[in-house]
Every structure is written in structure tokens, then in C-alpha cells.
Length: 106
Image (cartoon, rainbow, N blue to C red; front, top):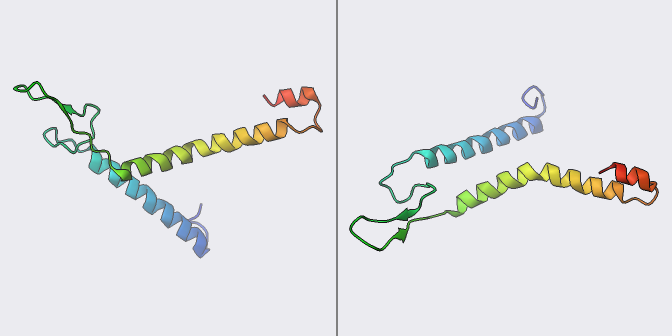
């Protein structure tokens, strides 16, 4: 609905959102191209154990960009529930409501 408006701010918000989503998509598409011989791929099994050696090494290389995108997505996903829960606790704790009404919120 931001693209339908004539306001510049609506268009800027829409294009910024679109750019962020495309950037995150590109990040995940590039990370999903698996070359199993490459040590920099993100696969669940990060331990490399050569057949001719008793020593295994950890090849995990978690980057800061991955943790940042994970954090932003988790915060964005959980923010609605945290805000709703906080409002629920706030409204149910008001003294002006009778005890039956406060229990009803839960």
C-alpha cells in the first residue's frame, strides 16, 4: 500500500524495505550454495576428520554478519509478542479493575 500513495515518504519506506529484503535474500542465497570441499560453507557438521589422521579440527567460521541478521530477524519476529505480553501484564495489574477482570486477561 506504500507504493499506491503519492507521498515521497511512503515510497522511501517501501523502497528501503524492498532493498533490505533483497539484501537478506542475496545473503542467504550466496550462503546456501554448497561446495562440500570448501571449508567456509555453513553446514551443521563443522568438524573435519581426515581418514589418515586421528586428529579432527573444527572448521566453523561464524561471521558477524550472520549473527547480526539472525538477531534482527529474531527481534523483529518476537517484538510483537513481547509488546503484547507487556501490555497484557500492564493492563491486568491495574488496581481499578476487580480481581475477576484481571484474571480474565490471562
